[in-house]
Image 1: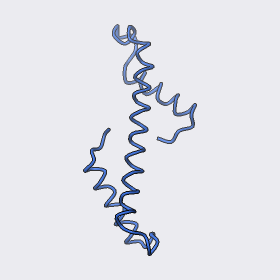
Image 2: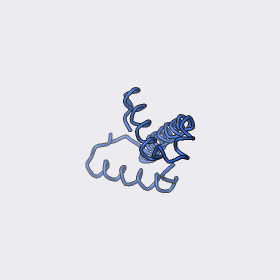
Image 3: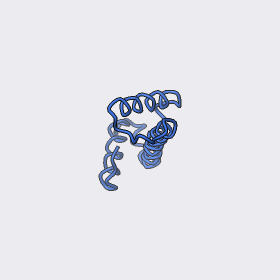
Length: 93
């Protein structure tokens, strides 16, 4: 995961304050519940992308010989496969 728990916590706190300062939260919304919800959304989204990246790496194993020989560029192939999966599944990343 690209962000650790503390970084996600900081982003959650920032977003909570932004929403609260703009009066975009229900008056009876508990701050800790809103922060926890924001944290969970960010965490799950990042975990989903991690799983997608692992799937792409598994697919890339099929091209191991071409990658080792230099006939294929690892980053280009990774991005191409990832974009294809995103397009096929209509994912938002």
